Amino acid sequence: MKIAVTSQGGSMDALLSERFGRCPYFVIYNTESAKFNVITNIGEQMQGGAGPKAAELVIKENAQVLLTGKVGDKAKDVLDRANIRVIDGFGEAISVRVALEEYLNNKIE
Image 1: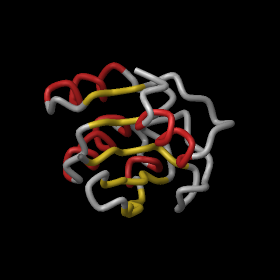
Image 2: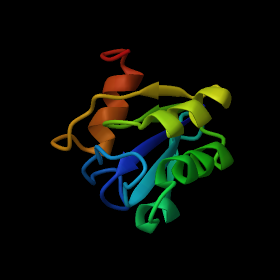
Image 3: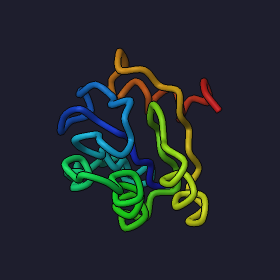
Image 4: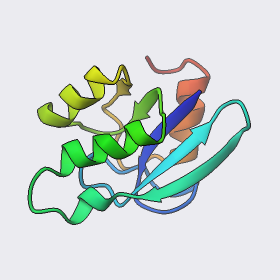
């Protein structure tokens, strides 16, 4: 399974970004290989439509789950249509690694 996490930086130890559409990066973690890759969010600098553009990136990476702070309605619709499970409500005081650990250890739903 692939899990996308909104991130302020390009590593597992970077802080999670609360803003889905305007996060600088996505960390894509593969639970089968225990490896991750980082992609730059091209939606971050867009005038409008950042959320749906970011959702397209997550879909293109074949993520099944998204961990983030908040997702706007338009982006949520795109993610829902792609059957991506959205786990939101994370704050920026948590690292990507900790958010993943909490999700994988069933500490959050």
